Length: 373
Image (tube, rainbow, N blue to C red; front, top):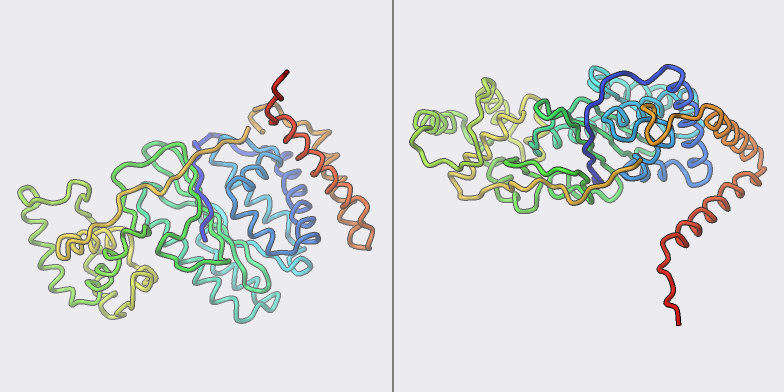
């Protein structure tokens, strides 16, 4: 299931080289501790949690209130785990911009190098489909520019990707988890976190969009000549036809070619339609509109945001990165991992006790004061 979405502002500047070196070192050690203690699947579950992921970025010293937290944290994790993938049975592919486009090739390279065999093709298909869903089936105004897939040698996976709204200069982060996923196109998310709800979006992954999804897939299997004839009528009478106000007409030039391609492939359902290369947001939007006008099955217009959150870096907030403390943390984890590998778990147990004490302390802070008398 997808487990969350985060909305973050675009900040200028780059992560300082000295900080990134420490980030990738600490990030690699944190993941190694989790794998040693709980297994590789636990990392997938934690990465798919937007609260944990945000907390990790903050712990690594990056600015909490920045879109760069996503891209830099993923890059630090990827770099920090280099040369340890086989040992941990844990892999990361993808990244920001052009690197995200090389994700299928990186999956194949890792699969060939570490003999992942039958999982390679499935992971590549998953990577493409997840990106297609958040960029095409959910048209919320955020265009994807970052895509990172985390996976194990057993084929389990999690995805973190991010889109940018060019008008507002804000980013939105999407989290996915393969475990327990029932459908890629119907309510795949568990929590979507954001401070701002978009208006007038096209949400074809909502439960109430099911009939519109089915009819869109049905129309894609029809001869495109009929569809394009109806489409030309709509375009011709755009100024006078009583069209849904919430559904502006797509202006894409590749709709015709995409429809012919879909017709030749005859997709079984909406997920199959999304999986066709070349079928993008404009084509899906056009099919959705015609399905609404023809069958009276409107899609959902609700932004799937449920609640908001924030954590409190490189920009000096809430305070500047303390290099001495950072180095001490790296050394403590490094020693903990080294000893755990040879069967000495005293430091690992000490970290557990520290976490327990911290939780008890927080619970006391938030206890209600007792009534006097």
